[in-house]
Image (cartoon, rainbow, N blue to C red; front, side, top):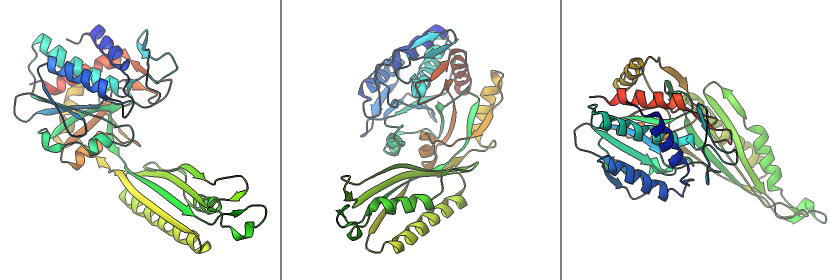
Length: 358
């Protein structure tokens, strides 16, 4: 049986451990200690990701990540009725401490009440928030699981990611020619002006239901009275549609070609690269059916939704692991208004227990 009070305490204990991306050592140590107490053998790969094993064939993976976004230090959890939030000076920490608490309470409660379950493998990654870095560096030779549930989505547990996009990052480094802005501006080539030409030709915002495009940063120039010699533009685009992906890559190439022709004495260096690739689940897949059956057992219907974000599941699918991403009772993720709904957090554990029952 799920112990609501213990679940809330576990969550509150975890969020008070500072674990911003790149600073996860204390959280890694705490999760290692807790998993070892549950009888798991916990290993780390070369990047510091945690892989917890136990005996048994064909294990099922429970996964989350141990880092949080900024500002995620000195979180002070406040239990307010059926919600847990911060004091408003930090994030609430639900992403992904709610996922960690769900995994721990599931395993603890099943051991406590003797409910038989399938063998489990727990995989907890570092540096998920900056772009799934830990998952990309994960040593998959240490992992035996072929199926996984990833607790890393906003909303109730029955909110399931139907598809997640390919995420492409880009950097444009522009070099013009410096000159005195008041004495000989005609001898300069403004890198910032070239950057603006590029930006105005690129799409912006939501392109369609499956695609977005964003200019993230622009930096350039040196002093107020100098024609700027250098500028950098960074951004990203995301899409589930592969035809759209190809069209956007071609559009970027055409824009850079056209602007380069306008400024032949300047240089534009571009770096366009995917950070993670798309996946789409099917109701006919065995793992999806298991998830649907577990939801049905606790009286819920799956709410399949497209996602504009990525998770470790994007990387797991690339390595042959059927990974389903579900909600973890967290809302307003990555903001000071983040909060966790306690009854929904309990439902997450009830779902997980059903999913891994023998």
